Image 1 (cartoon, rainbow, N blue to C red):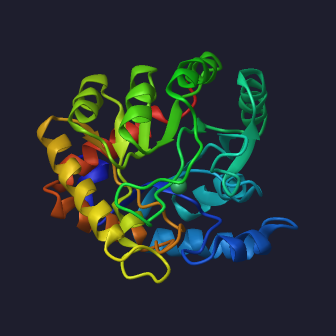
Image 2 (cartoon, rainbow, N blue to C red; image 1 turned 135 degrees about the vertical axis):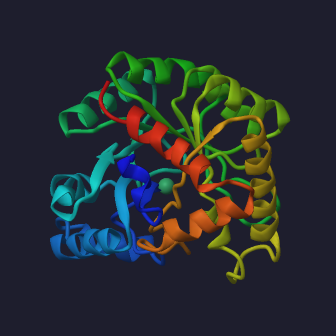
Length: 294
Ligand SMILES: [Zn+2]
């Protein structure tokens, strides 16, 4: 019998950030700013292992926490993959999880730096994040569709898969057309986008728990998180129908997402959108097989 399905409680966290605690990225950055707090990261890995997590794909940080975790995760029985840090366009969202570039040659230098620091894949910040002020609203910035192909080509050229943080139909389409290996978050896809997702065979990690985590939070548009989540659930349902690959990643550690239990919540949400365990496993496996050095 296949090892991965012997224990149906076993999770693969396909999108997490080991450095964050689910409530305050500022506190997390403060905690690790003068060197990674080994005790905190070790305790988190232990808790993940006890919660049934056997695989963790880290979306990066700028303080070295994910590369530290990658070095010790085997001691906790966790297969760990990381981009080390994410790359974002200067002035756009992404400084919390990585480093900036202004043009393609600077991006290339970041790819080489990630390689030198032991990255398993490259994470490219294609767009901003949900602003939770208005339905469908995103923080500004991000890449223009025409900028995307060259960057993905550079990363592929250095032997890396590309994990693409992307929200909004236009840039998601551009990333898929450029050969992005995964779409992370992928909020606000339209029908054409979902069709392209299925056709390209890229993996989608819809991070439903990340929108769910904003429900009821003060200081944001009332009902917006609910609406964003409802659309995402509907899109997951459609994507399943189209045969797309969808993997479970909760954005563990992000605001409102428990760093350990987030993945269990993500499974509940994926199932509420019509996914069976075997569908989730198929997507998770694609992530595990692809997001290692080529
Ligand atoms: Zn993330």
